[in-house]
Length: 93
Image 1: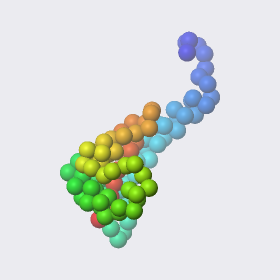
Image 2: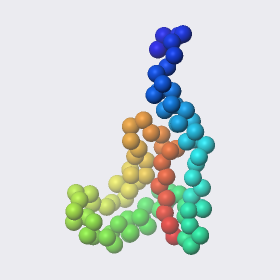
Image 3: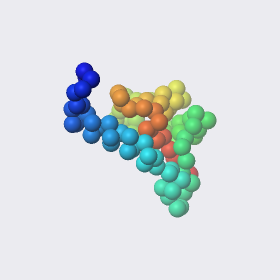
Image 4: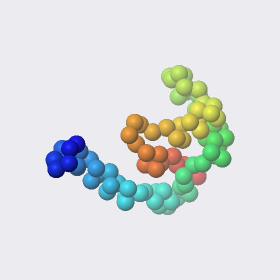
C-alpha cells in the first residue's frame, strides 16, 4: 500500500485481533482439575498412536491410517497464514 494511504478497515481489525490473541495464550494446565493437561511432544507419539489404535471404528470411516509419521506431521500442521505458535496439540492424562 503506498505510503500516506490508510489500510483497509477489515485488514486493520484482523491485525489488531491477531495481536490481541497473542496475549491470550491458553494455560493448558488449568483446563482440568481432574486430569493432568499438557502440550504433547514428539516423545508422546507412541502414546498417541496407541490411543488411535484403540479406536478402529473411526478409521473405518476415513482414509487416514494412524502411524508415527502422520502423528508427528499433525503436530506441526496449521492452516495457511496461521503460525505454529498459535496451535495447541495437547492431551489429558
